Amino acid sequence: MSKARTLKLIRFVLFVPFVAKLLSRFDCGRLCGNIANFMKQKVRIAAGQGFWGDLLDAPVRQVEGGPIDYLMLDYLAEVTMSIMQKQKARDPNAGYAKDFVPLMRRILPTCVERDIKVTANAGGVNVRGCADAVIQVARELGLGGKLRIGIVTGDDIMSRLDEMLSRGIELRNMDTGEPLSTVREDRVQEGNVGIWMDTTTRWTDWLRTTVGIREDIFAGRVLSDTPENSGNAQASMTSPKAGIVLGPWYKTEFYGNAGYGLHSNDIRGTTITVDPIDKVTPQDRVPLLVRSKGAEIGVRTKAVEGLTSSLAVFVLDFDSELLFVGDAGTTEPSRPSRRVGVEWTNQYQILPWMRLDLDVAYTRARFTDFDPAGDFIPGAPAWVAAGGVTFGSETGWFGALRGRYFGPRPLIEDDSVRSQASLIFNARAGYKFDNGLRLQLDVLNLFNAKTNQIEYYYLSRLPGEPIGGVADRHVHPAEPLAVRLTLAGRF
View 1 (cartoon, rainbow, N blue to C red):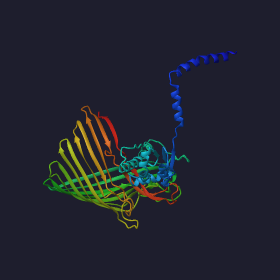
View 2 (view 1 turned 30 degrees about the vertical axis):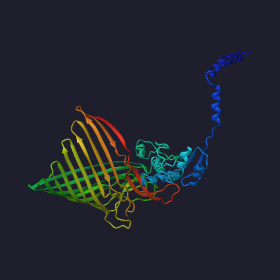
View 3 (view 1 turned 90 degrees about the horizontal axis):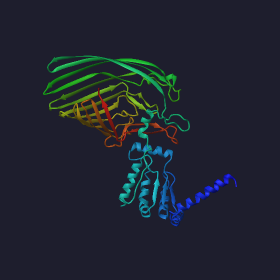
View 4 (view 1 turned 180 degrees about the vertical axis):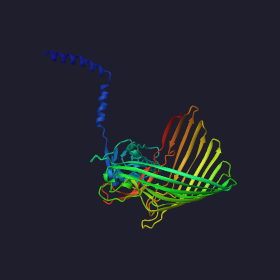
C-alpha cells in the first residue's frame, strides 16, 4: 500500500468516530422528518400586473381563485418613473400608481382572510404616499391593525442632486458616458466696484432732504467650451437718488424716495455669438447693465413703545426683466416691466431679550409692452411674507423661530399655469459661553413641509415624447426636515 493511501485510510478511521459522536447528540429521526416536511411545502407565487395600466381583473382573479401565498405586482419602467416624477412635481401627494389603491380596496379583505402577502413597486417616487393611501383604505374597510405594510426607502436622490453635483459626483449617461447635467461649461471671472456719495440737509426741525449719486463699474471675462462665446465685457452706469423726510410728529414721520438703479445681466450673454448647444445658430448679445428706476412714499412710526413700524407704497420699473431659460440653465433678458405694490414692516422689542418681527408685501408685477403671450411676469409672486421671534442676549441661551411665505405665482405670461404656495419654518436654539464659544442647533424645514423651493414651466422632452417637446413644470423640491449642530468659537 502506498504512503498516500495509508494516510487517507488513517484520516477516514479517525473521522468516523467523530461524526458518530456528533450525530449522537441530535435526534436524527426528528431532524430528517423536519427536512422532509419542509421539502413537501409549496410556496405559490402569482403575478398579477406587468405594467402600469394593466388590467385589474387579473390580480383579482388570482386572489379570489387561488390558492396563492404571494401576489407580485410590477408597475415600473424608466418612462413610468419619469411620468410619476412629473405628477409629483405638480402635486407632492402624487407620484405613485393610483390604480394600485382601488385594487387594494377590492382584494385586501380576501388577502387578510387567506394570509396572502402582496409585493409591489407601485410606490414609484412616493412610496410613503402610496402606503398612506393603502392604510386609509384598510381603515375604511375595518382592517386597521390586521395587516402590516412595509416600504423600502433610501433610493430617492432628487433632493440631493444639487449637493451631489457640487461635490463632483457625475451622473453620466450609461450609453454615451456624457455627464447628464452638462449643457454648457464656462469659466467666468467678473468683478464690480461701486462708488457712492450723498449729503443730507436739515432745513427745519421737521424737514430734511438727502441727495446722492452712485457710480457702478462692472468688468469680466468669459472662457467658454465654445470658443466663439468667449470674450471680455465691461460697462458702467451712474445712478442719482434723492429722498425727503417730514417729521417727526408724535414719533411718526413721512418720507419719500426716488432714484435710478440697475441690475446686471449674465455676463455670458454679453459675449455670446452662437447657440451653446448646437454651436451654429447665431445668438444676439445683451447689455451687461440694465437701467431701473423706482420711487416710494411711506410712513414710519414709533408711537407704540418698543414697536417700529413702517408702511410704504412703491413703484419699480426695469428696462428689461430677467427670465429663466430651462434649456440653457440660465437667465436671459426679456421685456420691460413695472411693479407696483405696498410693503408693511414691523419690529417689536417685547422684552430686553425677546423681539418679534413681521414683514408683508403685495406686488402687482406686469410687463409694460404688448405681447399676445400675456403681461404676467413668470415667477413673480403677488404675496410674500416673513416673520419670527428671536430671543437671547450677548451670552447664555438664545433661539429663534422664523417662517417664510411665498404666495402662488404665474409660471407663464398668460397666468394659465401657477405655482403652489410655500410656507417653511426654521428653528434655532443654542448657548453662548463667556469664552466666545457658541453651541447651536438648527432645525430646517421644522414641519417637513412638502412644497417646492422654486418652480418653472418650459418645454422639455423625455424618450418617446414629441420631437418638439412637452411644456411642463420643472421644480426643485424643498429640502426635507434636517438637523444641523454647530460648534463655533470667536477669538
